[in-house]
Image (tube, rainbow, N blue to C red; front, side, top):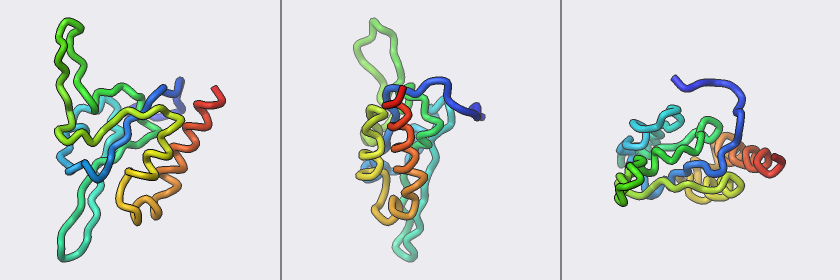
Length: 130
């Protein structure tokens, strides 16, 4: 289980998942060293479900392992974790904008605004003041 408590240092970049590109395959969830990625399932009634992964920005340490597995410096090839290129590293100051635009379906973002965008904005303010 990931360590709880206040951060010692804010990362320069945080991972953001573009929900439209995410299929919910959970590849990123399996490799995250701090367990900050969860699977979100939205139930749309008879027509099925929509699944995508989401990153808990308060717990993300910016390690980039969900984007690519670090290789040896002599190996020019890197192993990508997400087969759909749904995850990118975004400067902490810009995370709120990215999450507001691509963090999930519009109705999901609106109903979870404080947790998603509010948290990202708070982290950006902390980063700007440090």
